[in-house]
Amino acid sequence: MSTVKTYRDPAALADAAARQVIAITREAIAERGQATLALSGGSTPRLLYARLAQDDLAAQLDWAAIHVFWGDERPVPPEHEDSNYRMAWEAWLSRVPIPAQNVHRMHGEMAPAAAAAEYEGMLRTFFAARIRRGDALTAAFDLVLLGMGEDGHTASLFPGAEAIREAKRWVTAYQVDKLASWRISLTPAALNAARHILFLVSGASKAGRLQQVLYGTYQPDRLPAQIIRPMRGSLLWMVDEAAAGRGGPA
Ligand code: 6PG
Image 1 (cartoon, protein in one colour):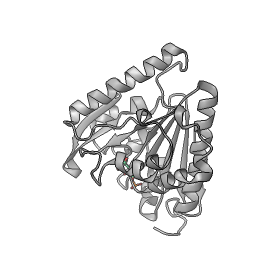
Image 2 (spheres, protein in one colour):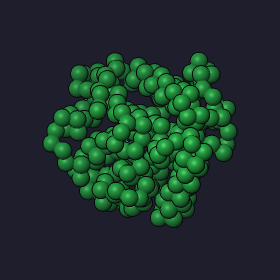
Image 3 (cartoon, protein in one colour):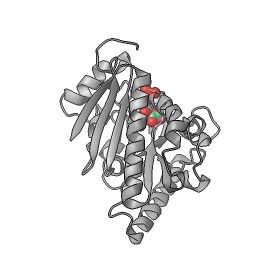
């Protein structure tokens, strides 16, 4: 089931999203001893990460019990300005006491196909260990954070990509024609297994596309964000008024 909640501006959206992340993370730790989060890149989550780094919220989490992963990555080393890992690290993770071994980045500096295979292997090993210990019944992130691009892409699932229909593999790498660049991305098979999925969308430039994705004809090959339909979990869209088409800052 999907729900849409609208917030006044990007700062209000980031604050509400941060509280949602805290609630889901705490619940996962209370119920299963660990929380697994998959992060997104992009400008919208940067404000969320900055909010999560602030003391009042950071103090609410048991950092040793949190494992952080990424939903997608660009083909760059971790220190590169385009790196999704670097963004989350600088805005959030470097500012909180998360153990280094709990931060599981995609290796954008490797050949993309090898990086995708490596990440998938790491994820399968990680979740298999949890299942063996009885901490989890299925391989599923507790929380997946996603953004949506103006063309309707999410994670690095771009319009027309075969990856949108990937049903078996959890991680894929392919060349995105419109970017003339490789991307590494979790697939719908991995994303839709999550217990909670949170989409953050902000800005007037996304208003038309958001309406199509939410209320238009189902055509995920053209609007990849529509492929996000959790198998068992919840789907919450958190958007600002501008993205909801109610004016406000772009
Ligand atoms: C990335 C992303 C991507 C992003 C959207 C929205 O690596 O760019 O993970 O899917 O979430 O493009 O990004 P903005 O919030 O910057 O518009």
